[in-house]
Length: 159
Image (cartoon, rainbow, N blue to C red; front, side, top):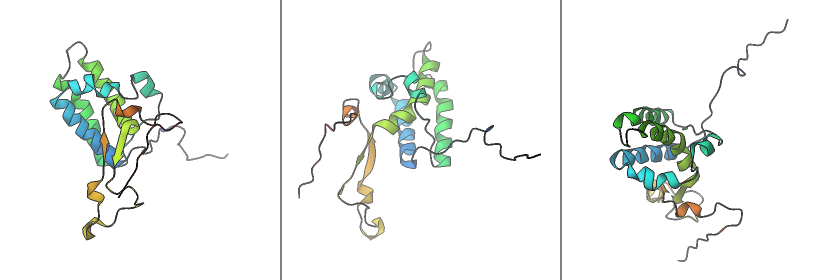
């Protein structure tokens, strides 16, 4: 009799699909939402994926940094207790945020580079420019850029 110890078929294994940088952006977004809930209803909810059904059809997001991932999950679990939204819809909106926000960050962030022509930034400790680059999540109008097979944005560096 051939018995296998491999239980991979029975256990759901989640691989990291999100960067630490995006995880930090999710945490910062949650902090902003706690101070200003209308940021979700007026701006962030308009970004892709635009509804929970679409979000659930996409590959799930898991942070590559376990401690950041746990902090995100903790914030999501405490979100509804803050009563940020009208009582009838608070629980539902908070579940929607937990489902969609990581994917909104994944699909809508734009990088900001000081010196984009460099493949890798020089060492910051030796005067490099890595600290002048970052990632940002911008309003819904910017999210329409380059979401097609035909590019609609060009960027030039002169000088």
